[in-house]
Amino acid sequence: MAGSPALIAEHRLVRRLRDAGALSPETACALPPLRWMEQRRLARLLDRSVVRETGPGRFYLDPDTWAQYRRERQRLVLTLLGVVAVVLLLIGWLARPR
Image (cartoon, rainbow, N blue to C red; front, top):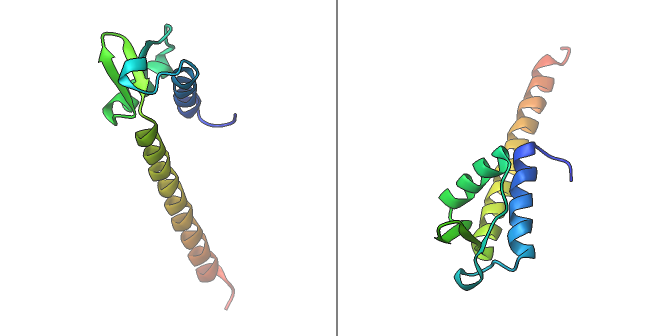
């Protein structure tokens, strides 16, 4: 998977929780020792309620919130690409010979 180290760490965390079946409070599990980037992404996912902590060191993935989080991020990326495209078109139009 290509991408930024932060996104790779995020997907690794989500995959670990999914693979462990930790998708509800009842199935929450402990995570293995995390790399520093994974710790940062876990904090971000906890802040956004994508991952929830049921007790000290026991986590689960909220699949619905994860899907919404991904949709919002995709919408942001598409919006930014649209803005960049418009700016490039405007620059090309203004730079054309007259």
